Image 1 (cartoon, rainbow, N blue to C red):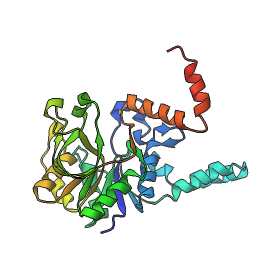
Image 2 (cartoon, rainbow, N blue to C red):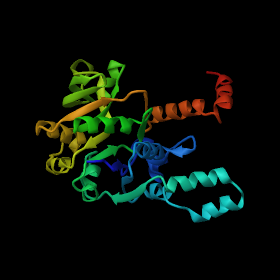
Image 3 (cartoon, helix red, strand yellow):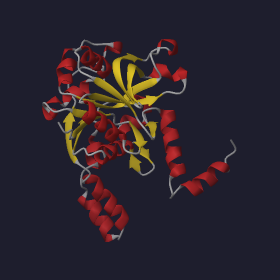
Image 4 (tube, rainbow, N blue to C red):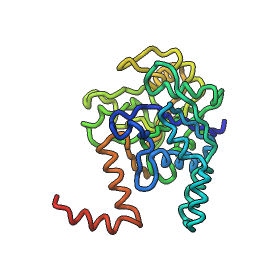
Length: 291
């Protein structure tokens, strides 16, 4: 089946960015002139996705407002002849069909918001992308994954090669067998292994293409690490059931983890340095600092 929906979990508290995220969603932190979640949405749309299902909470209204029309602002920009800005905000509201679901209940874990979308997704396969990280790639990461899905009729997880061994314990690492150059079949995912116990150096995270069967698996899961319900545990159960799960190492990609303070700062600096509008003056500023 053609995949038309992507779930973007965005209901978390963003505690790593407090006090900044007390009143503003972490997904709305700016990278130059766009919030993080807009980069995620734009990747999905560029990959052919039509419906964006955002899982939110009562404190995430800013996300809904961002992707909505703002007629007063549009009139103000039109009156002041700010044509470029007007075109930009109109484009945001027309990127896709946005569906918002409030996450409810007392369970925690990154599989919980996925389960919250069951009524909207139904019996269709779907994609999942986190709202606080993204990959810039050509072709887009999700497009590369969709090509694997169509070829092998399987679940697909994006994969990033971790060059530094000491960072392997931050991710879910694939125990896998190669299928072709950048595609492999996953036997299991080992969550945050020590470097000496890691089965490979490929981290499986960031984006997923999953079958509707995953919903029943999540609903039956017992609490795992930290008393939470984990998507990795559900995917391992999916593999045990015999459903094929493939990894796609993203080609020509650059991963940006904006859910981490230091990585967020690096992302902003990198985007500023590569921006035609800011790079010249920003480089001059950096060179003038006493580092």
